[in-house]
Image (cartoon, rainbow over all chains, first blue to last red; front, top):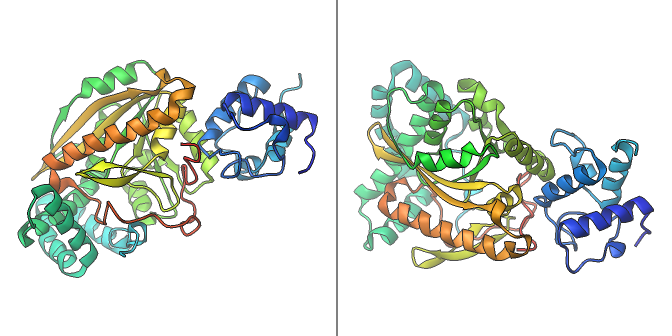
Length: 90
Length: 319
């Protein structure tokens, strides 16, 4: 498993907390593993909860009309990179 | 093993739809209704799987073997509502006698302004429910339609009812986009319609009692309804024969009330309760049952055979 960056770890914690993933430790999430349909037990419907949590925590919206959504939601790493690129500067 | 229903031709394809549309709109409903008889006869003779599944379903409901006449009546009802879709899309309620039952349930749900999920089925005419949305232009009705899989239906919608066509959420996009689009629709206070009787081959299903025998129902619509945190209203667009339709609305649940931890149990209870209501309506209006495949045993296939399935093709991993 490749190592989580700080930003990825923060996002992993947000996901674990908001989706009540009882059997998953944020620190043990593989940043390159598929977000949906993999070992995490998440599916595409969880994109709703993730989007909600991201908007509260980072202050920006994941939108349905983004043509890159497939890539953005591919893994923790991809999602984190997208957030870091687009979040309003704190 | 019969072919999965998804692999059946989409209601005769573009040509048949063009033909039916041309005859219907040029010559009017009375003429088109006459043409329905030879069309039904053709289907009756040529589409053996549909004929067989009709006979099996009617036998379950009637408790005795169905006669050929009853099977013909069943297929004819399907042909009739398919034709009426054209008129409903082009002209709305005009020319139809539509009774509405339980509309106040829908009002209550919508008055709160936080959107609603309408759960429909392939029992009766979903198009008939769209007529209702013409009475409430201020609350748009949003449906998910896979534009790649149903090009004929999509073309028909865009030709006859462009305003409805614009509100279609394309199920061929990646699943996360479809789900986010539904979330955005609900946040704007729109009604979102989901069909909850048929699952896709790669969708998580739950077997619950239906006419005395466990039948698989998809979990996706309910998981989605739970995540959207909105009032859920069941709706049925029943065809009563002739030009008569009855729209029935029943309040079902408010998923905003659901604690996060009890969701799995709640979703299972929803599926059971829904199957019970669907059974009651299918018993009362058996000729409105338009799932022409073996509903109980047609086991969904493995993922990957069905490209771009849309919402929740991988859903239910936790349920």
